[in-house]
Amino acid sequence: MQKLLFTLFFGSTALLFANSSCDVPKNDFDGLYCLNKVYQEADKELNENFKNLRTRLDTNGKGALKAGQLVWIDHRNNQCSKRVDNNFYVNLDCATKMTIQRSQFLQDRLRECVSSGCQNSKLW
Figure 1: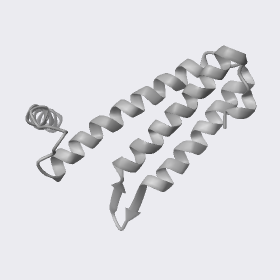
Figure 2: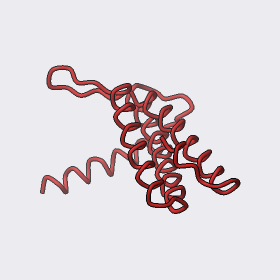
Figure 3: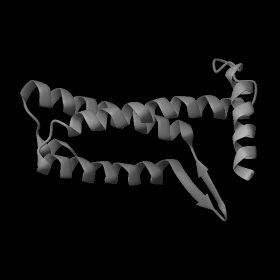
């Protein structure tokens, strides 16, 4: 029952926000909704770039890519989130910018793989 209420609440909330403009958010919650949409798209693109690059790599390259990604995730989390007492805060603007930068990094590595061959040393 709780799960159903949760779904109904967030489902109806999404309909309300679907009508809000992200060009000029009316309040902080609209702004948060809009930032989250941008972050979700950036994260989706990052995951696609990661998968596309991974398919072109040999075993060592896949290991280097995964290790580099884990280091990047820790760095992003340290830069863009914090815990205070029992609260957890995420700076979505920071997370979005870092995600876009990482996605571009992965796209650059993919372009290198296609044009001149994959260089495992550049995957970190």
